[in-house]
Image (tube, rainbow, N blue to C red; front, side):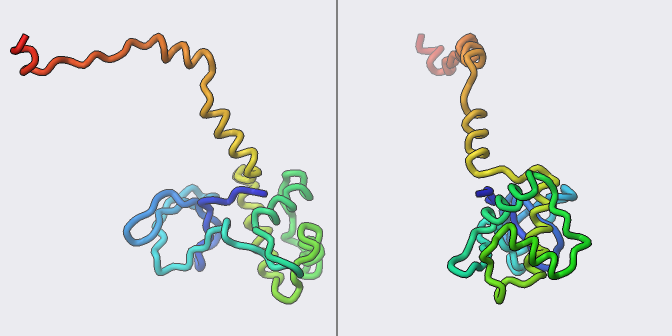
Length: 168
């Protein structure tokens, strides 16, 4: 499943945003495609992609899993739906999530999910949660050379205060 932590959609604004910081009145977000930072106020409807799920016949499937299914279907590439009819979009979405609830999931929802997938794919933000945690672990581990450099650095010696110097 894809890790979508910190990625949000704001109603009334197109595209996806990365939460950068929080403020007293909302969030500071960065548009993923344009790299522009803007404030997102608490009165706006802000939805975290990590909290969104798609209805199926039996349960709700997290959006991250739907993105993972599309990623596999497209072999990590972009999903081309711009010239597809509504029926063709339904068939395409069915290949990513075969048992989606046909009464509660609309074509507009499908288009939005696929467009979000494309935004994240174009910006290299589609990594499986396991891959992201492995990358963090690798970055956190120090190489033997880094450890040697650390050991070679002289340790800082605390200077005696003026009071301690006068007592000596």
